[in-house]
Length: 151
Image (cartoon, rainbow, N blue to C red; front, side):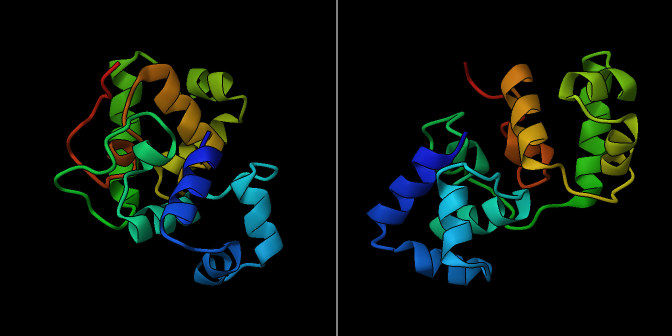
């Protein structure tokens, strides 16, 4: 999902895992488990790392080899997540129930994302973007363009 890019960016920038862990205010061992994907890094931490290295989430997820977009917001926008997730579902003729089934979560989880209660969890964000070729940065409100990723 993101482990190769995390390690690559860290090493290219002469950083050690301890420095990255300190930036996220977590232990080095937890960061190491995130970097090897033995645990899934939360979306908010991936965003911090993307901002630190000035790359897009799409780049971290290896959806693109373009490191960044001309305009990118540093913050995740819960309002835009809500709007864009609803828009995405309608464009793909998906109910909350159907999307929940695809992601193997409860319908209430999708409803929480659409009510601006929670940020989309990393595995669900990755699955949606990979399956439907939509930009993670777009869904999270970090950019308006691109909406869809080049194949």
